[in-house]
Length: 194
Image (cartoon, rainbow, N blue to C red; front, side, top):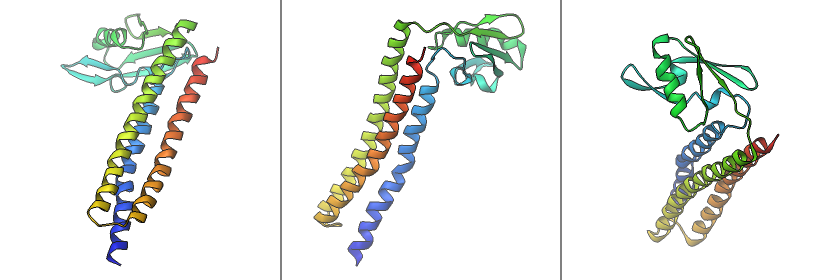
């Protein structure tokens, strides 16, 4: 009976402890994909840009109101107008490829037309971000797999239990890999939409 309790501990606890890590990976990928410019104005393109204001790096969404007046325009209105130049500089130097126009009170950003060349570049970036998520999931899986194999070597679980747990682990991880695949496909469709 003691072996059954140990098996349950390794099987459930190990996977559940790491479930949060798997979820973090998926959520991080979702945030990364939001920042990929697809030709439509989206607040997510700017909200994670860091601005050097008041002597510290601060997220843009904590310093300004970001709005979308139409499908091709973003407007950034800092709550403190004295940091307008700092916000402009942060956006212009970010990797978004956006160029704000400063009118003295707020910044207006027109979304550039996405060309075929831009789309190809976006697809490369998408592939890179997707692969990073897969690698992260793989590392978490490998850590769990190692714990299961180690438990077997230490005599905590039988060989049958080891294979059962490894199979459950592969099924569990497969679900996260499917999520990554779906997110990537949806973003690819969005990028390719004219």
